[in-house]
Length: 106
Figure 1 (tube, rainbow, N blue to C red):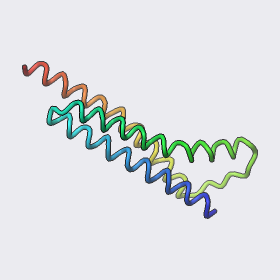
Figure 2: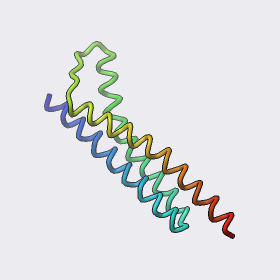
Figure 3: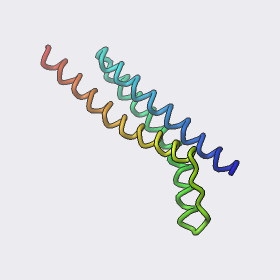
């Protein structure tokens, strides 16, 4: 159980960091700083990959017939990871909208 909690906190931390990068990317795009926005998207992607690694490990263990223990903290970790993934897509769309607005305004 203690090992599972550590993995869950790794997922939560990585997902939270990714989400923060995506939010900051939108702010940079709003300022017209598109290169910085794209760099923040990439930074968020790297963080999200850090969260996927321990999650993949859990899935592989369960697929290998190890007993699965679903806990509230694991459900929370997966929820945070999924919301970060969704937020990335939304951030990319908002950045593209800002770019189009800037193009039209010029």
